[in-house]
Length: 334
Image (cartoon, rainbow, N blue to C red; front, side, top):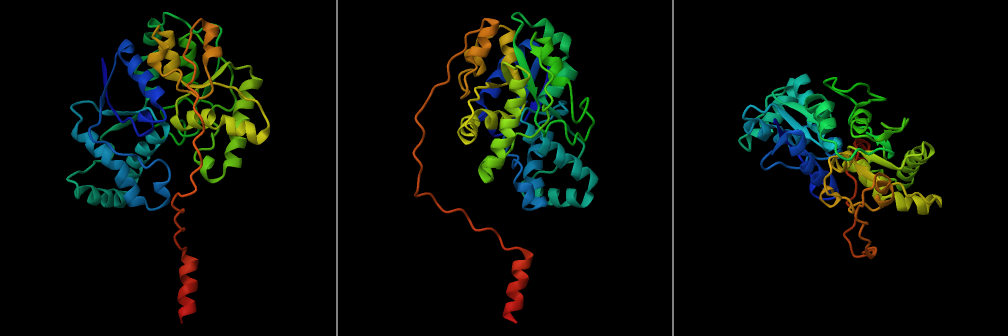
């Protein structure tokens, strides 16, 4: 068994539950042993780094400090979530490159009785571990129900292959790792030109029109290449393309029905596992028609009435004043 420390991240237990369920389902067949980091906290996603570097990196590095305590000979931390992977890798890298930052972060960690030595842990994405440690031969050997005839668009998103601090990926713009894995389980992999383009991230909340356009481009490209289904390695990408596909349809007057699933779900199907145990049916855009191409019956998503809009919610906080604003106040007070 290959042993690793697991940093699941917040999404895996909520919006990306299908990712977590399918990861746990495929781990034993391929000999992957994951020990969850105890008392882990949110990585801060991408927003916190825009506020203040020291508290942001301290928040992230607390997880690395806990992992180092729990190490027991397992050097690598595996993060299935792309945002978590990027933040953990970024914190480790910049603490190595900027000793002053490392000092400030460790001063903050010391308040909780923790410390972290930059470079003492390897930060790995799940896909990286499956390809380069577990290996394609092992994955192929577990396939009992090859996905022959299923045309899949491999979508990595923008946070996995870049900036690639440790040079783990085959290419920054057009990596082939996900393609190779999908071929190993028998899928017909389309040559997807937008595989590392952004899904819009949190623009769905602050500039939805921009996000809808990015989502539209990705799905249009997948449809143009006659994909039956798109698969991703990132909870944010899956949520944007799946949960906001309907809103993009309303915005553009389109009729996209492209199912978006996690690559671990497709692995589980190829391994002969029950689709219900792999999180199928949790998606909003049904994967049922696509998966029927390989003779697999998946649950239909459970439809629910839209939640009523709440008008009594708290107002958004006012933005902090800029340096220019403060300078104007000082000048006015003179």
